[in-house]
Length: 163
Image: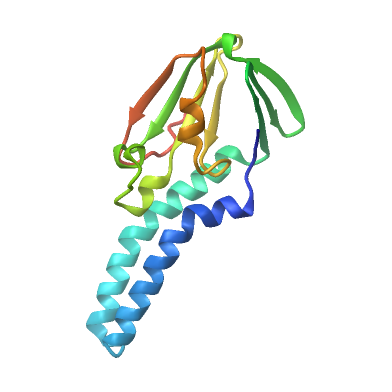
């Protein structure tokens, strides 16, 4: 299984936000473009979109130029032309950062679909970040990995913390 950032993955994460934008547009049209309608739209739009943009840009920067090829005993990590093979036996732990609502399958806020994995490599103390921009259902795939300690860390807002 190969993971890398694809245009389709961007749309998979942003589709609900596009629906929200369409809904807000319909509300504004229904209110005949009144000033109150535009103000409410702008406030709600900014409250929902700014966190999403922050996460999306941060995830893109974290995975830009990365490619992960997953196999049963480990994975091949490629970044900027350099490749290394990491076996699950060499991994201290895999930390899955996910919202509680996303883990149950029904995110309630638009930014709750964003999640990522931090792989802690014991050979060189390297931390590899894999985000949902590479694979939108990353949390399901991580839970199927055997032979490594997987720690689920629930967060409301899963921004990448620089290690």
